[in-house]
Amino acid sequence: MRTFSVTTTEEPFYVPTEPTQDTRSGIKLLAVPSVDAVAKLAAEALLQACLETPRRPLGLATGRTMAPVYAALATLVQERPPEEQAILRQHWCSFNLDEYVGLGPQSPGSFASEMRQLLCHPLGIHPDRVHLPDGLAADPAKEAHRYGEAMALAGGVGLQLLGLGLNGHVGFNEPPCGPDSRTRCVDLCASTRQANRSAFGDDPGRVPSRAITVGLANILQADRILLVVTGAAKAPVLRRLMHSPPCENLPASWLHRHPSVRLLADAMALDPPDSDGLSF
Image (cartoon, rainbow, N blue to C red; front, side):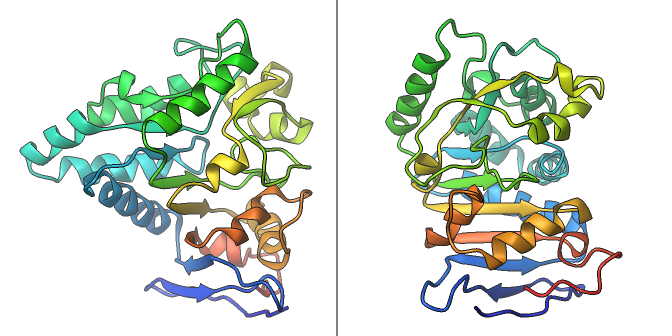
């Protein structure tokens, strides 16, 4: 296994990765010094994907890691000429990774509510153009199938934005999870509910126990993937990801098999202050 030390400078730099000696990884690590720098680069990538022709739907994510990204995107869009902003709003199409079962757009803590606050309102995008699973659907399994079909009918995702869960999940694909998993209804791990408690009065017991999530098979069908990892809390799982070959116990590790994954990570995720330096 190849290892290498990562440091950060004012200028970002790429480091190609090889998870095993005989299996090359499609992940390219871009190390940057701060959360703000990560957010700006991620926002620039999203905006570029929005303006490409032919246009493809964006795959979007939620969570604390993504809030600075959407704030940076709003700033970038507001700096564009008015006619370009109008075109972006008119043609916007995105599909979020997941939604809690039992919560709808008006429910506090729902991802639909979060996307309206962080994306729709600041950018002036109509909520109908920001697609999420219907958490209030009477049959969540049927809704998951419908949502997966809707993504395919829209042409599939061009650029997929991802965060990295503390237990190695992407979307809500909890371990163990193989690469063939499709969009479906899943049970959430206790650690995931604990990590997401801040949106529910800091009470993990109020976090819904189930969600509809886009599956790994669907995620891996995206043309390009942008994985965003920030903060010292993510350093252990990021280290696991960079050292592990694809395996079910670390769902994010299947990203090694994708030919075009850009990983944006800040200094804290790569080298937290209580470590002696992480070897990647």
